[in-house]
Length: 415
Image (cartoon, rainbow, N blue to C red; front, top):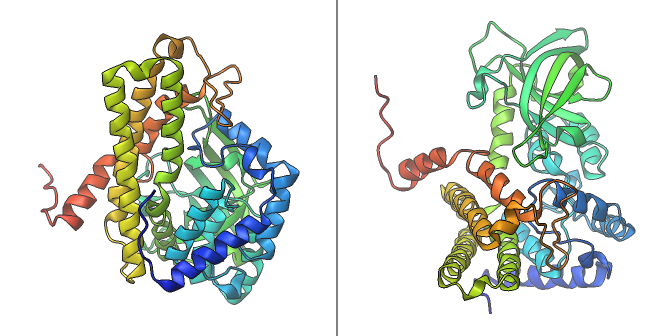
């Protein structure tokens, strides 16, 4: 029986309320369409998820969530959300997981752009942009990174020139997740080249269709193209789409990044828990559970997933006591990314030669449809490498832990 933290009567009452609502409103066939919580790597599970989202049961679920204000539920009530705090969001997410049904999200629009609009936009901008995120009209991708300024966000070269009541944008962005599925991009561009590095930037919401933006997919080692690069040659957006005002983009971008870094640790273990038991089943089918070394490594993987769960419980306890998260997000990110890389290697060792032959192993509704390319465990092996790089490399996370959690001195630059 999983350990639960006593989060107080109000949270427990919310747990009962939201669990009852989910049980009463979930379409009966929804949980069987796909494993909604399999780690979303690329290729096969991306296609399976897209097919499930096109099913009438998903559309019904989406409508019911919208009526209950459970799409973007962490947003304030006055802008269309339900005002759930971080603790309630974690309880809500876990309840959905246990029921086997998805939390309908609006991607970066919900988690990154929306919070920045809520903090920095005018009332007129909030009234226009936020409902379009909630109902799915606007789907965003992030236009921050550039070929020569991946980590140095303040050094962006993409230019924005004010032309009447519009801003014209020219430059290049790269490593843009999901750009092929987006119709809007939130772009950080330099609108005042004479200002100090952080002060000449603006945060602009730019339409992508028929707007002089060429999107080129970047092929990853697993064969998928989840990232893109964009060549922007005179894209136009109304000044109304500048959030926070001209020259104030750095502050808005910091709000965006603050939301990007937090919130996952409390439920990070859930998808890895399901994936682990799938691999255990594969090991049984291949007769590898009789190998003592394989058994030992599977036990290690179980231990790591349990450590993720306990770390999440600690975060929930801190939230319940009104303590803001500190370096826990870096600890969590380092833990799951390094774990998943080694987990992929374990999958290879269990499957052996059949892995090299391109075998696609099916377990329940988590089948890895290779589609003529890679099977599920191939994708885990290859694409788990990316987890130690994106959203802050493992080296960066170790520095944050060392300096902020342990109080160690900063690295000294060698001359």
